[in-house]
Length: 190
Image (cartoon, rainbow, N blue to C red; front, side, top):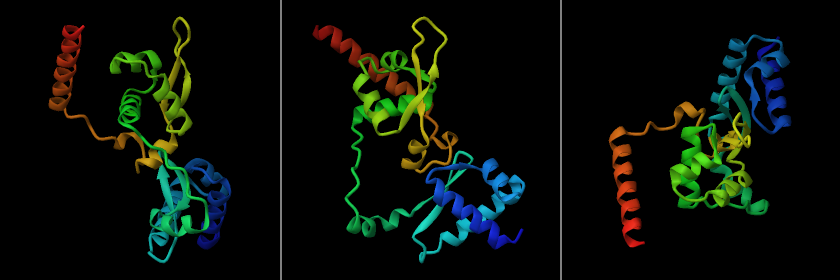
């Protein structure tokens, strides 16, 4: 198959789907092996990288998606309604961080780490499509397991969860000490 035709097919698929498509499915659709398809997509990504292009292909955990470049946002909002920006408060960021690093995780496990109820934060993160239900834990009550979504990867500019920053063990120990001091202070205040 001609390279330009393969690129055109990939472009059409990604445009039509509007969401990330796995490499395997793209390779099958254009009748090429995965390695060749990956090279074709990388070539396309290089072409889209030019400042004269308003779109790009991004990689999300082994899948690819056609999307608008962030630099085009100002032009886009002039013609569309301003997209609703989701505000990630400290509580939401804290809850999201716990889920991202500990997934799959239950609501109860999140609340044990945070030390407070997390219903509102979890519901907001579900609403924002940053987390999703991954299934149920095989335990009494069959609690829901939560994990992050492709939208989470997109929002934070990550190709995969492997790109999450490593937690510095010294910082982790500092956080534990702070939490213990705060808990001790709360019990003294009561």
